[in-house]
Image (cartoon, rainbow, N blue to C red; front, side, top):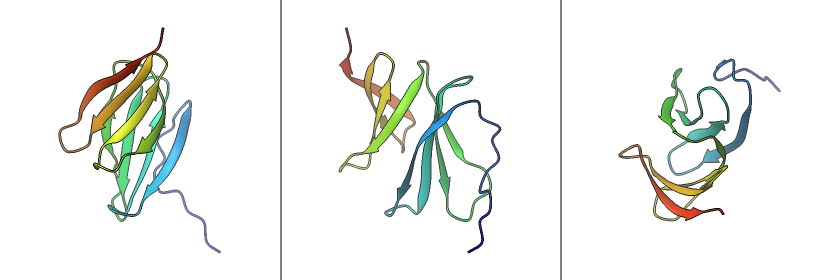
Length: 92
C-alpha cells in the first residue's frame, strides 16, 4: 500500500475528516488559527476554505448537500455553494 500526503496545511489542530462520495472530496476542520472548514476535491492540490468566525470542532453531512458544523457555541449549517453559515442551535 502506498500512502501520500494530500495536503500539507501545517495545521495546529485538525479534526473530523470526512470523505464525501457524492463529490469525491475530503472534508475536515481546523479548530485553531484560523478556524475553518476545508474541502479538497480528489485530484486537486489546494483545498477550498470556508472561514468561520467561531472555532469549529466537527462536521457532518446533511441530506440537502449542506454541512452541519459543530462549534464551541452551537451548531451551524454551512452551504458549500455559497460559503455562508447559518445558526441552527445555540448552546447556553
